[in-house]
Image 1: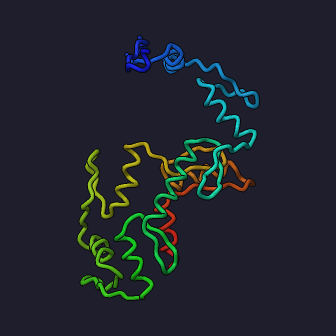
Image 2: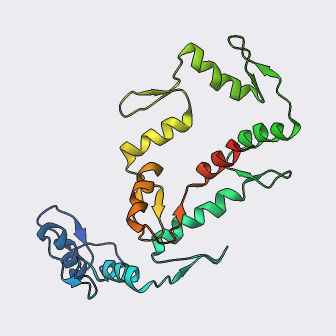
Image 3: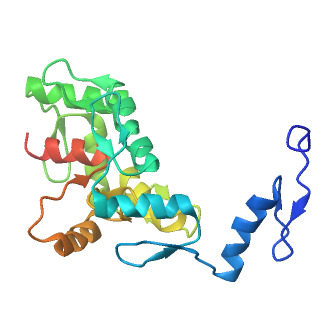
Length: 222
């Protein structure tokens, strides 16, 4: 009944964290003791939890039991599948009816739509560069003014574009959106993932790229 009434009677003497079951406390204690009783029969790497060992073994067996119900793609870990599913959610938000490109923001879609018309009516007064939208012109103007309106609340560093701030914030949040689908290792920056892929040389390795990155890549070739 203690599980149902919200009580957590088992307390870790090392850090004070509480648990509903004695077994959960026992698993938690391995963080402090460093005990890793679950050993991979293929490479002898050890793990603190059975579930982590099961995930690891799939690297050797190639098993991908977690399947996306949107596109049929399968993954070794559920957490990887959950990360992948976010792509479908974002893709369905703002789609261009001209070319099918998708965006996570309505303003980005509006700016993109102008590229189909070919109209560039916003002119920089400093260098006469023409831009397809006022927002693009505002971003460009910061090259001349030195303005950095996007400031990191953690360290105070300023950036000209919000996307650059978002990339910078990964240093503070620990976010690692670039994932190697060969071994499920994640990286903060795409350049680090590319260096990692050299370890898989000769294999056909797929890269999981966050959706906004794919949008920018496509726009670069338009």
